[in-house]
Image (cartoon, rainbow, N blue to C red; front, side, top):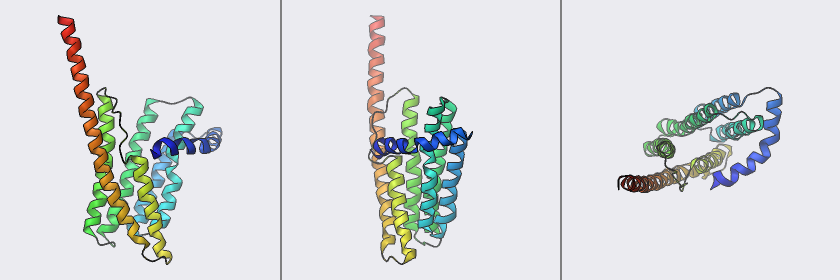
Length: 221
């Protein structure tokens, strides 16, 4: 849901900036690479040290590259399969870095093995949720379901909570509890979404096989 409405809004807002970068000779692929590097730096430099507020600020700045690069490609009329592949692949890398940063914090100074495990589950389940849709589409199925917690929801929930939890370092008491709550929400939501997509792919594959069987029977009768 967030992906549907928020993406359209920010695409309109960022269109002038995308046009500016094109006029300066910046390529969409360069924006994709820089954005991913920035997200990884914010997650793997700040989060393992418990600096969640500043890490979230850095990540938020660079995460908008995911909207800018596609906007640039459309404006320049250079959308390509390679660009789409690169963007999708590096999205997975960036997402993995964010939850890896959380896991490293809880495995180290955060000293909470249970939350470390939850963060790792969020990392893995997010990758699998994305894979189920990509794999279903690769075998010709529409995978006509969005699911409870998609990438946009995972990022918003976890980063908003991390940013607010980081205010603990500025003297706001008790707010650090928001990050564990968010990680549990993302973990459960990702599990539900995975189930939704698996059920959808199973149904669509059965329908497709039945339709193929009917066509085959019709051809031989």
